[in-house]
Image (cartoon, rainbow, N blue to C red; front, side, top):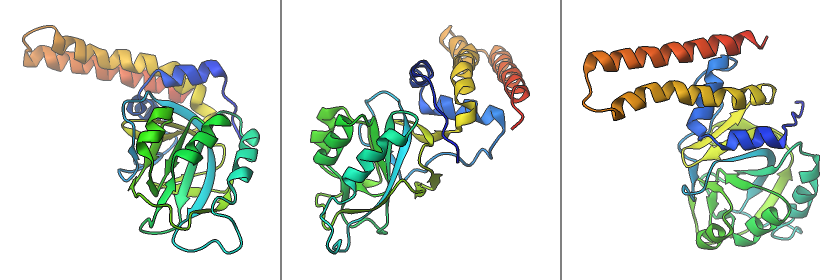
Length: 246
């Protein structure tokens, strides 16, 4: 799959919006089914107070249930960090835990501090995490399926290969947007347009919200506000679909 490079300005604009807004805007392009492209409820934000994060997937698989043979506990970590430079943007580490159910923590303070020092902007795992208070102090966005206190036989099995996390297939270089609400992928070919359209989408929704804040609600006027908001969103969707041949 091709890598899509996004400018720092585009990344900054994407970070201004929450993940549900980004997911809503992507729907308007109609380039993938609406029930695809995001991680399911198994993947939770460990630090929901942190702002949205946008990053480029650095993928890996992890196993903790069995000894790694002659490998060290963290064999593969250096290789993964070295391959950060192959990505077209800030790395967002994505681990698939090969043990089902998870046996031990996929990551903790040392791994997160190491990734952060080499430019990673966050970490996501289908497995478990630990050292949550220490990682919180790093202000390193982290997403996991749960918490387990031990690391058991932690070792990285593979890096820079497709993984499946929270029901979402993730390839190296995929763009991901994540916050307290969850994680969605952003097709690279429309990422800049998504950033452009998000503000207009929020403005359309504000028609309803502003009305509800204006005073005593009236069912008829509420219906009119909803109709106006939906019309704006439909018009936006038509324009977006008209700009792409996907």
